[in-house]
Length: 103
Image (cartoon, rainbow, N blue to C red; front, side, top):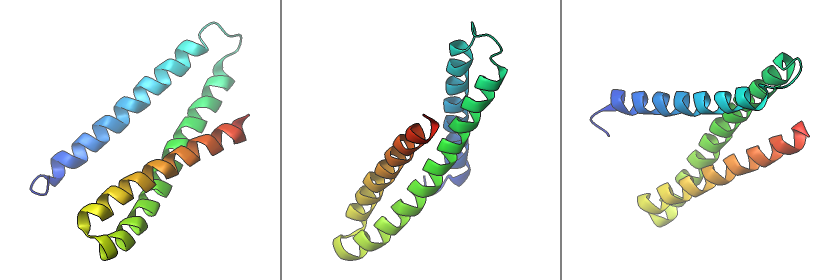
């Protein structure tokens, strides 16, 4: 995708928006029958957005540093794979941490 940076950005924004739409629709369905669901819906949507932003930021930073150190020692491909694994681990830690904070 080196020759098509616009398409890469467009795909990233599309999948981010798609995941937000699916998540928000499931939140709305969950609280459809509740009494005064507005406050619960707003709280869950804010937690969702905060979790996504934290996971993206921390996963990106951790992946960047992991790639920098692993690529110097083991090569570019190992650096990319290591960065991918570290960013997924950071996202998982953010998700589990946010679950503990919300409860």
